[in-house]
Length: 347
Image 1 (cartoon, rainbow, N blue to C red):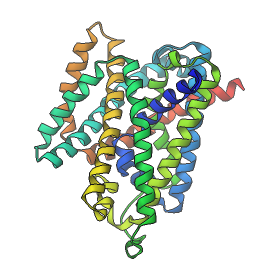
Image 2 (image 1 turned 45 degrees about the vertical axis):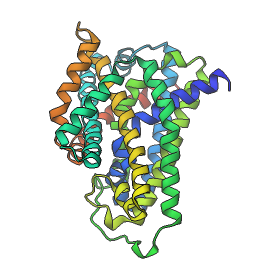
Image 3 (image 1 turned 30 degrees about the horizontal axis):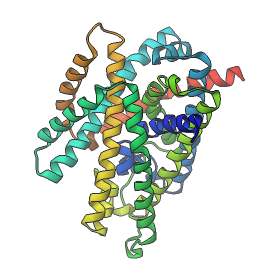
Image 4 (image 1 turned 90 degrees about the horizontal axis):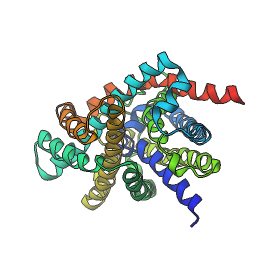
């Protein structure tokens, strides 16, 4: 395998794992942002996949051409100094929120499987994430490269199994799933925008892997296509069991309970990996943002950050997704439009 192909895979992998976190793999995000629109949800996922590919392509292309080494070098030329300062604060808060949500999900699974209290489960997972966050960007990329194929293959295998061997007697489109907005177009935009907040931070650090311009273009497109395909599969599964997943923290796990303990345990592991990789990535980016602003040892920042997220994570997985993701999604729309405008203006 050539070095260029390896780099395309590495960059696409970290792009995908930044987005396939607890909310995505569990089906919680798919149900909230797409499934409530019936057929419109499928159109929304395709639109989101195209946008993910375009945003990934444009951001990585600019990183390569501008020899951009960090997020600040990308942000301020894109949105200007005033809006850049505002977005800088928003991004930092969002990464703290994502880290808290992922640790909440990890703690929830741990407490459920091992009969721990939620606070103890959250504390244990915050400590484990802290250990990985102490590595540099190469450690995060290596983790993503290892986990991404396991995540995608695990989700694809599970999704097709459920679709092929579904019990037709449970197929129902009655239920109380509701879209996050009044239409699938806006919902799709919000979904891409809040995910782009952190993925742009990660991609701004990818210059060491962008040896050619083609690497960034293909990595961005590959990431978007992969996300679209997996999301379509999960949405199909959720629609099959539409009436039974409303209000569930982990819709896909709820569905898999019909297929026995082994299947449920297998997907719990996949979900845990998704949460863990997303938590470590968001945590690393958060520490990097804070470390660029204050003159404090980054290891100390990492330790303090993981201590601070523990009480926030104890609010619970679903409550945090419902309240925080939508809010940041509206704010992140500005970032997405700014990126698209800059590129089209140059064309």
